[in-house]
Length: 611
Picture (tube, one colour):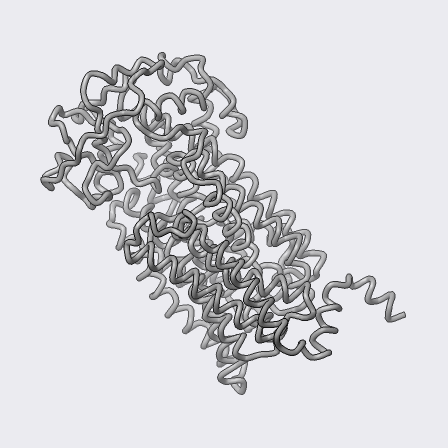
């Protein structure tokens, strides 16, 4: 069978599995719709949590960041993994014991305020829709290449699939669907990674591959040299910043890492996972399982990214680095050109495809441009920084300007094709990428619908509605959320991981401080929580809008902190505002203070005290 048939088969079978599970696990009550009835086994919940948390950003885009940013990508790796550990150890058990399965519900009861609850619902909507834009874009990218449709059509297909198992099954259907999705996505990620690292270094474990040496079969010039050394030399010779040294400032790296860590610990769609198991002990256990399942992928990402960059350069520029005749470019390059996610602009008219630092097209990203660059747009040449290459590149032959646009989100998907792996591996990656995107999208949609039906309608606006009406409202909210999510997927504010990073920044700036202080401070009151959330959310939103949608100049950045990292600043502003306001206003009622003290005491200690 050819690649197209295999892709349709793998993706089609996975869709049939997801829809079948949704029908089997159809939610019949609000408890099943919101928290899967609270009876999920810790191992299954760990898999579902890992799938929910490892979105298209982890599967598709993270290795792309590692490929193109090198050391600068370490903030994403440390932030996302460290944040999950902090959530599992610091917050999850207390939130589980508190007994409120949504963040707005926790905030509304802890801060004894419907205003605080409503503000939390608004925060959930902002965070979730920003996050879901990245998932929908990831789905569109996969379908645009492997199902030969445009990105817009791919997003619509993804919306239809999510509709079935999110609207019908609720959390019950989503949980068991995500167990299947985790199995598919982790197999689809690790199998190609093993092939790739073996092909380049001869090692079987991707986790140790970066310390190995390159084989002669890849490029005789690179034979016997460590992978990272070769990568440093090659990309420096092409005008890029060295792979193992960072281009970002220390303060920007720090705040990106902090924003991602705190954002992970404040993500509403992850927190709700700790309520789908029967007991607090099971919540801790499922967190440990989830961390193990997450680590399998995250320890593999650096090797996938680094080896993918080497293969990309070697394929496009050829063994001697002078470029490849377009007529002899491999099929993968021309296939991805059709999606508009890679493009060639023959700026010097020599017919050779040459990849180096700099923009190949004015304005950056081309959309289905002609490969000869008929836009009539040419840039000034971008000569390499170091023309003394120890790897055999004759870079003095001509000014070496970039002629290739590469969307970083294609790296994981294109890697198997670039390395000429078997078609079944390529089809498997496509199915895994779709699983990663749709698993998180479904979790986010459920959070949005729950926030609207349970926290806004049932708890605030229409407390008299019955369970059947609340369940109907949840499903209607899911449908509306899917439609809005599709729009944001068609118009995302950046590549997948950057878009997701913005959502984490919003979560860090709005939720993390009020959750932490709500658990560990009896003095924190409703006035402080409301002030903190407003300051954190508005400051971070304003910063993102200015630099992502209003073309803010780089020199206007606050202390050089990028929009992806400003959530850390917003978080600090939230802490300061909340602490200041709560100090100047009256303390919470006695019963609230007693409740907070109680959730920090283990159940066994409570029992002992009662006796």
